[in-house]
Length: 215
Length: 117
Image (cartoon, rainbow over all chains, first blue to last red; front, side):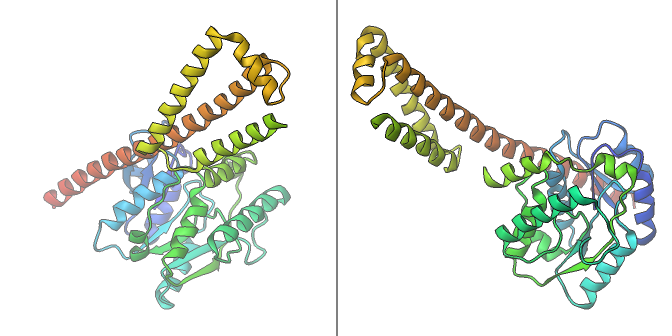
């Protein structure tokens, strides 16, 4: 499941890549204005349309609600639209979840040395991890990593209220409260020029903190 | 100084107000009571301007105008806090509404595909 907002240059490739390994690719189009939704649909994704732009957290929850309504669904993999995740990682995480009967597998870029986010991003991310661990009681090594595998029983137990980027902390908190078994799995993030240009700005971490603290 | 105690208490009260769940009836009632108090004080200040100076001196503020400024700052804080809360609550509703529309549309499309098969 791919939350999608204005990624028309890359979304078709991402969807095509996913379709090779997954039967159902769902894109939640968060009110894109650049034809991303049509590109995703043409590449073979099932596209859900938000009538207006709400934010990535809202798009994720819409996708979760949709998947949760399908009795045949077993797992949902969340995957970023900008092409910075590796499909191999997603498949390995899914296997791990099945073999070890885990309800949640979080991708982490800090479990090995493959990913080098740069000094500033590392500081911000590590701060985010610290805040997340402080508020959730879970011990994660990465935060705000869009690659996750979640079993549908866990999906049905959570409801994300954070519409914007703070959902990445909220989802850890709410999944943690389900007390279902979870693990982290080392993944690599491909920092292309495109994903770097689209990535989270330093200032947005201020928004995330305020969203989390003042409700 | 009395004024410092009053102002700090005021700011703390705004903070507590901000932490309360928005949109409830008690929230609305508090806002209306605050508005009523504001109107009464405003009328009193117009009719008896010296009343403000008297109160200011009583709590350790030099002039009535200064006290008015302090009160205005507090009132502004309450307004900002209350507008922020209402905005958050409104966004919540908007999200739920948009999600319902999205899911209803998806459900209709899925039903159509099922029928076609």
